[in-house]
Image (tube, rainbow, N blue to C red; front, side):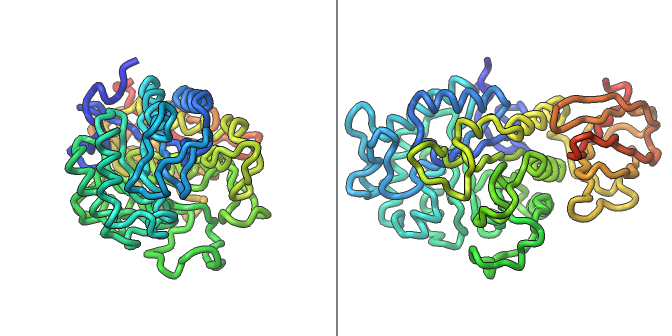
Length: 447
C-alpha cells in the first residue's frame, strides 16, 4: 500500500481550499485519540490503529501530554520533576519510546499522527508550559520526531488562542524553523476557531474549529464555560465556521476538528441529557464538508479518553473504549471519505444558490456542493427540496442521479434529469426514522 506522504509532503493546495500530498488531493478524515499515550499498551495501540485504518481514517489526533504528572500505562513518566524542559528518555521503555512506537505503527498503516505537544487548557492555561521552557521542550520534540513523514503538528488543545499567545507564537516559530515541511495548525476552545486569533498569522497551514457538543437550545445555559467571551454563537450550524473561514484573506483550508462526539451527553457535562448518536455525527460531517471543509474529525466519547477498567469515566461515558471502537458513526464517516474521493472534490465549492426555495433553517438545512462534473446535496431530515441542476463545465445534456444512504454507504439509482432545469427531489423514508440522505448527480457523459 502506497503511503500518502510518498506522493510528497502534506500541504495546502494552491487553491487555498483543500489539502494535497504532492499533487494528489488529500481528504482529511481524523479520529480523536487524546489519551492514547497515557492509557494504551503497545498491543492496544496496534488494535486501535488497525481498526481506524480499516475504516478509512487517515489522521489520528493525539495529546502527547494531557496533564501532569504525565505517565503511560507502564508507569513511565514523560519528564523529570514534572518539568517540560527535562524529558525523561532513559531506558528502553520510556514514555517517548512509546510515542515512537505509535508513529511506527501508524506509518505501517498509512496514518498520520496529528500530535498536540500539550493539552493547552491544562498546561498552558495552567502555566506549566511557558515562554521559559517552551524552547527546550519543542527543541526536543522537533529533534526527536521532526523527520517523521507522518507527523502533523497541532498546537492548542481546547484553549483560546489569546491565552498566553506568546507561548504559541514561540512554539510555531520553532516548528516552522526546524520542520518546515510538516503541516501546522491549532486546535481551539469549544465553539471557537483558530482564525479568531491566527487568521492573519503567517504560520497556520489550515484553520481548525471546534464546533463543540451543545444543542441549539443550550445557548442560554451558560454555566459551564466562558461563553461570555465567545466570538459568535453558531450552535449546531458548524457549516457557518467553514463559510466564514473561506471568506478570509489569506485563504486557508478549514475543518471541524472537534464536533459532537458519538455517545457524549448533549451539552457535554450533564449525564442525564440525551447522548449524541451516529446520525448527529453524520450531520456535522456532511454539513461541514459540503460547505467546503477539507475534511472532518470524528470523535467517540469512550474512545477519545480510552476508558478501561480502573479509570474513572469522564463526560458520563457508558462503555469501555474497546466496545465503543465499533460504534456505527466510526464506520459511517468512512463512507463520506469514499464518496468524496470518487469525485474531483478539490474543485468543489458550496452551491447554496442552486436551491430556489432557500437552504432551510437548522435541521432542515439542505447543504449543496458543486464541483467539476458533480453535484452533491445533503438532506438531514429527508424533506423534499427543489434543486437547479447546474454544475461547473456542463450546461446541457442529462444528469444521472442517485440517492446515497450515508448510514450504509450504498447508492440507489434514481433516474436521469435534464441539466439547466429545476427539479423536485423527494427522498424515500427509511424504516428506522433516520432519514438523512445524499443526492448525487453527475452528467451522463461523465460516467
